[in-house]
Image (cartoon, rainbow, N blue to C red):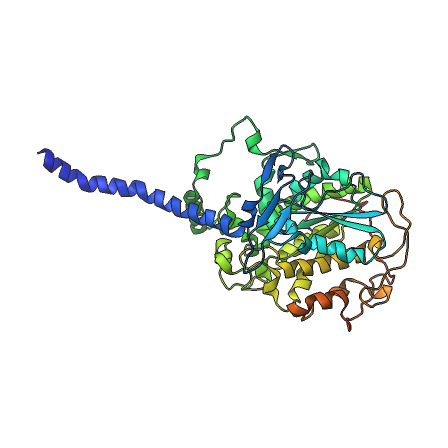
Length: 464
């Protein structure tokens, strides 16, 4: 009797076991895919040590020396941080007389984890700018992994103002929208929506609670499928800001779905512009494209496109992200350095990015340094002259411009460093002094494009 009962219960037990194990296996598969995304795109980042912060959520640990393993037969890259947790040598405070200091804010693309310090666009831009003036040029790399304008503003406000920069460049790409969604919920805002601080949750004694369903990626996936069936407008990878697969969904989603989030992620730059104006500091906004906006085969190793939600072999020609950034820059009266057009003119576009990540390669850093140098020279007179006089805040007086590209002063503009059909082997020689470059006419007919101070800053409304 007992044996017969046990025999009849066996199928039921197996069915219950399958019902219990199936969701566990599905969740395990989603977790593996998520971890693989992080490992594939941020392998070098794991070598770095970041510390939790009360003000900027996280920052690089000071005084660390990291050797990042080389990729594709490249030599290992060395990364060192100074006592301020910034990549590079120690920085003099107060700023020495006769020094022009440029501060670059941004994420791992600015940090340049995969290349040596001398090969980053910050270091290369410093060398290029030094050729334009007798003053001492310093370009400081303030890149922090997983940063965004929100954290960059807090970093600048609480720590980097002491560096007394003459020019601040805030680098923005649409991945920052994803990072802004993650950190904004942890940010304390002032009465005028100005960010005050963003404390890391692990520093708080109050435990952070979240809905139970938010702990399961399989549930997020099921929600997105149900929503698509009933016709709800949802992102291709769900609404979770923690899901790495939503990082590049802006490439394929409609413009209207990302306008509000993009405006929100750009809003800290308005506060940064106000702060810079109060301190007499110039501010420039810079942006660059994602690999798949330039080439269908860029960053193709380790299934990088698939992991980031991009169908393999897809060239995404959408321009609406950069249109929104350009609208913001125009509304805020900020000069904009947009590298998209220049990068598209490069002959071997795939060479601009790492094969197994979306970061710049050595070639990409050189190209971006050329674009930044041209934009700085075009928008700020400090980098367009030579001379020796230097006012109290590091503002040089009017002096004659050098001729690094064998041109008259009134011919040097952004067009002087275009990458039209330049082969990688010829890039260094051509970008620095190639002959037969097409001359261009300045927009206002003068040899200098003076910077217009953002005296009429207004909140970005999404339209001109």
